[in-house]
Length: 184
Length: 269
Image 1 (cartoon, rainbow over the protein chains, first blue to last red):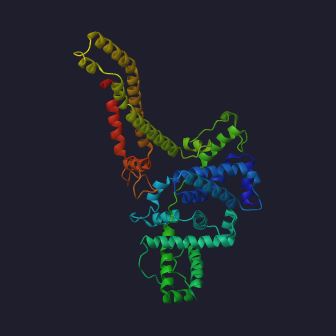
Image 2 (cartoon, rainbow over the protein chains, first blue to last red; image 1 turned 90 degrees about the vertical axis):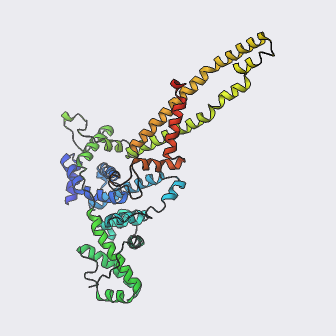
Image 3 (cartoon, each protein chain N blue to C red; image 1 turned 45 degrees about the vertical axis):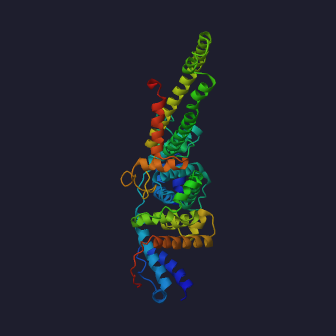
């Protein structure tokens, strides 16, 4: 029996320590995804908690032949999408939203991580999701395809577009240093 | 190598460098370097990817550490107690009541959106806006009432001005009539003024409440950053920002409430 299957079996048996181990094992991956997708720490904590609760409720449905992490991340992706959708529904009125159509204009320069997060928030949700799953959760294209339920070719395209748009955004923000990096 | 092939290879090289934890330039193949040396657009693209890789390295390290374990377990217990099904076997001493239940988590689980402070802030803002609208309506209506009454019912001064030309008995009856009407209307005015004053106070209170919950906004603040009190300009800016959709500035709102409260205060009339 795999390590994942053993952990799930103990959780289903009602072992509180196993549930704790479950959370501790996956919380950084789940929270990291939520944090980078939602760009808000408290929202990310709420969603991450909800992900674990949903996972606990659905543990019996997990296919022991498949790895646990992508299954859990798929729940996280769905919860993040729902959260973002709800957030968009509570969006600002159109007349007001016009004032913040491009919030990056006029912003002072930020540190590198903040600049990248700012750029990421400007991406389409699908691009952002692929980028985060690949670069935060370190999933390969096939795993991202499984988590998101999209074809690998589509994931590859989204990931490439995400990188290009991010690179372009950083260029527009004029923070790409004008130095010639040597190719070795 | 053409430009399309260069871009394909650049993406592959980007991933390979990331997995090795190396800088983007390290280990680039000779044909990649050769094309970048010849094509200005591809070299620019390479420069952008190089910078993106540098940002990515810092960005990945800035995910805060969290420990959700106890919050999740407590929430799971709470949820299971309500639904009657749970994974954790409870000891009799626990009695089905969770030992720890963070308020924010509990709200998130009880069916709300989880962002309770945002909801409270939004409700307070709407309360303030509604109160302002009600006060505006009173401000438009109440000052007109006395003029209407004066037109339809001669006041005591007007009646006395006719004394020279009218019979004193008629003047007395007129005074009596006016006083009756005025006495009948007094409670209406009093009630209106009291209601007006109460509304002004409620609106001011609501604005105070909004101020407590409004997250400071500044051009440089972002929701994932640290509290803006450290870098932003405070809640005043945040409130002004959020009052903008209802067409009021914060100064207008406070001035209006202040004047409304002063003019409607029954103790000063």
